[in-house]
Length: 442
Ligand SMILES: [Zn+2]
Image (cartoon, rainbow, N blue to C red; front, side, top):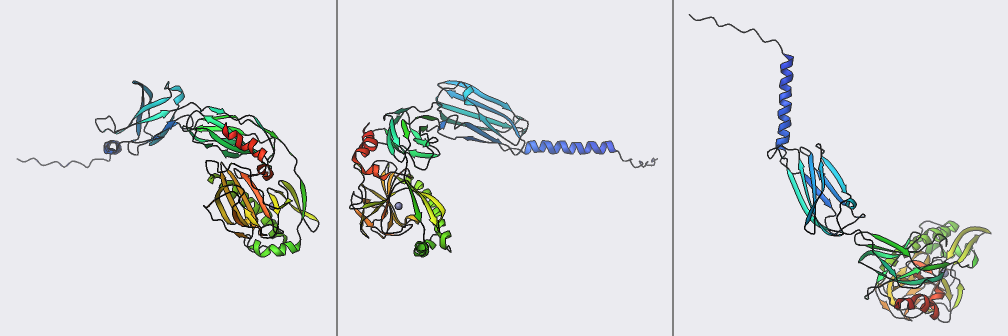
């Protein structure tokens, strides 16, 4: 006889069981996450080559987007011995950046082979996690370069300049003289010595201007010593310039090319202030394009048969209708002879600039090497071409009245590292020998 099949009553809803089910799903999903992470963690070491120092520390960037980071091991090999520099555990971070303090590692300066091993939290393979390895050889250099100053202690007057000569014990990434935010590059010569022509600018506070000789090696280690320059302040002349409406009217069309739409005294002031400042900035930038060797060996040639009509470093007050409207320092020497007189290269050099240059109007800039350059302003015509080599006394154009000029003359500047210095010094044979040329033979 067949028994009647009993029908089970429907099971009541079991909350506990449901929760367990959800938990199981979560655990499986979690495991799947670990299992699915078959990708090794990322490791990025910098610097990837070259030098290591306090300025160029060893930085390790780790990442693992899957199961997260688990551990990092760093080994250093030097002269046949092996040192564990770091063993670090992580708790599943997706990324980490570590900077290794090499001061406490016991490593000595020289070649070091570094080996990096990083693992993630993946259960693959066999619960060990994915692994990434990398090794690289870097040069540890924590010794700052040694500088030997070969030139004598030299007193220089404000507006003057001097050559300093030095040697550096190792290859440099940068060396020269640093003073009050300005930097004057030293140029390495074929005999291994460095030459650096240093100006003492007019436009600085002599008390704040403290030139230091600086050398930075390829690892970034820096040494600073005294430059041996003794600074002496000097008084400069003052002048009063009257700006007339007739002068402004005569220049309006030309200046509107520099400041479109300007007129009257505002136009004059914009050119005298803003364009002047822009021009000075450009001159500092042009200094970097100087030749690494001196192209000259004689004093600067003065414009022949010319009268000095404006002095270097003259502090000029500009008056308009009886009121002071501006104050600027005149940073060149004005020389006047006949109209459209030949303008001659003051020394051998290369034409760095030839064209219209703001305040200076028609202008030629010659490079003589070691950061020394000459500027010829207000020219009516230019015959020199950029890139051309010129000899001492070669004609580069004709004098004129272009730019901020009230009559045919030459505005002549001598620049050192983009800073205008006193042109008369450079025209004197004895000064040129004492301060600039003789020290080069040290
Ligand atoms: Zn001038």
